[in-house]
Image (cartoon, rainbow, N blue to C red; front, side, top):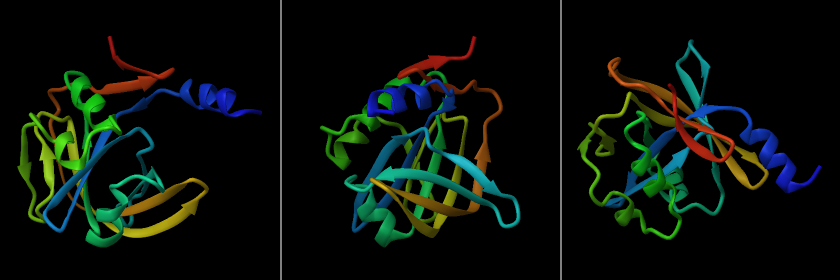
Length: 158
């Protein structure tokens, strides 16, 4: 096994695309993630993974709350903007339509759905942290189709 083969094999599994947003000390953070999954119904738990070097760890480790924004197939530009590691946390939100949650975290408008969560546990996962979040609220917009990631490409379901 090598890094390239491992990435290609994992990339052959189609996933949805999310942008996870958080906030700490008046700075908004956000990043694109396809490592999102549900974990438990009782209690409502989800998980995602984040590189240990990512700036969003600042807010997640200290701010304790975050929003999972599940992107629609019309939001590929948002996906790419939040995946751009050359942008500062504030630049990632430039031009993005949002509203603010009760916990003062930005929710991306026109997403398929969103979940408001609090950090329940953090697990060391090699070069990533595995965040387990407890869901405290959510919204669903049934009239949109999902954005999908497959073989290193963003795709729409036809």
